[in-house]
Amino acid sequence: MTATPDTTAQDIRYLALKARDARFDGRFFTGVTSTGIYCRPVCSVKTPKRENCRFFDHAAQAEGAGFRPCLRCRPELAPHSVVWSIQDASYILAHQAARLLDEPESWGPDALSVQTLADRLGVSDRHLRRIFEVQFGVSPLQYLQTRRLLTAKQLLADTNLPITQIALTSGFASVRRFNAAFVAHYQLNPTQLRRAGTPASGQGITVKLGYRPPYDVDTMLAFIGKRTMNAIEFVATHENYKRAGRTFRIESGGKMHTGWLIADFDTARCQLVLQVSDSLRDVLPLVIRRVRAAFDLDADPHAINPTLHDSFPDGDGLRVPGTMDGYELAVRAVLGQQITVAAARTLAQRLVNTFGEPINTPYPELTRLFPTPAVLAAVSGDALGSLGIVKQRQAAILAIAQAVAEKRLQLHAGADVPATVAGLKALPGIGDWTAQYIAMRALRWPDAFPAGDVALHKALGVQEAKNPARVAEAASQIWRPWRSYAVIRAWSTLPVATKHVATHAYPVGARALNDH
Image (tube, rainbow, N blue to C red):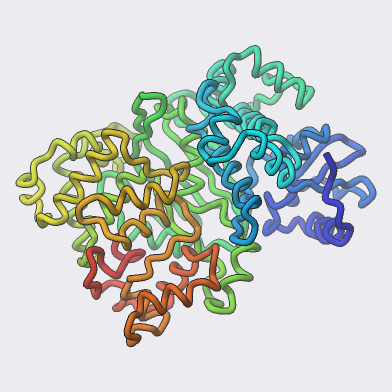
């Protein structure tokens, strides 16, 4: 286990540490040899001497070298750092393995092993271990152990959940194993991390989630605000606060959990303060992961902007909006085909009013849930038609609902992207555009590219070409592996009137980001 060997890179990191530069948050961690503690670059403690600093790419490396997490800057709050590449197959494979390890749905004691992870990636467990250790300096299980421990550390500090529940929720098979791992890594008993003033039961759970600047929060919330459906979501912005809230459901371990969340952006500290209902305690790590994806908190502008800045210089702070529920996003994408934002929202609102179930929350704006896959799968075409949904869209919605209800289709960030895209395109009424759009927002694939989009053609100036989709696809190669971000930036350059008018002759309207 060694720190980053390149002296120049270390010097750059020390300068970032001295400046407390939030752009580097989560990109590296600093181990201080005089204290045995490792910190984020934004830590407010006195800057350690250069000779006492060791720099690590990942928290797992720092812990593997014997350093304990700082209790002030709290490394578990840092945005994750998984960089994409199209140059090195081993690099891609190792980072895809890390991406799967980062998904809490894989954390159950019987759900994950190196062998099952290797099988998922189509390689031998020996090969996976070898390339993973080359890329990260730790084994896959060491990486997962650090992720579990940091998740538990956050829950201990920010919530009043019982220790037993935290242990199981964080992926440990028993409290005994959790306690042993915690003491071995941190030389602390879990109860020593309890903080005074954690919220009482019934008032929700509050946690903090970091992100790297620049982040165009206003554009993100404006995007969400234009598509809000009454009773399940809202956006409220003011000079003193930027807030979004919604209801949602999450299935885990065969059990359905429903509840609400409130997300407040603290732009001064580059963090999102998340309040989650008590009903979601058992799946809190999964909720946190979904929120990070929904607001694209783990995006790394330092990696993305050099590739896209020359083509889209005004988009450095833009993020790809995600979703809390990939199934809901897919249904809403179908409803938005070839119509305006307002019309799509009207249809979605009718669907929620008719088939969504009520939910009790402390917020009068949040009173219903989006209809479940099972409910929509059982709805007749005539019932959907009575809401103003045309037959082609009816077939697509029913097909999506049935595939999700029967678990033939997984629409979340841990899903196999090529297989899921192929599965979507096999459904009636789902073309390449819709599949790419869902991959971009629900599967969190950074290289999705809806080449046939007419609005994209206009933004790129290729609409007059004989085959604009082919020309757009060719032009997009210089933006890989960040084409999803390129699409967002390209759409943002269009006049407002273009963004909100249907111009697409394909199964899905051209207004993607604007109409779904």
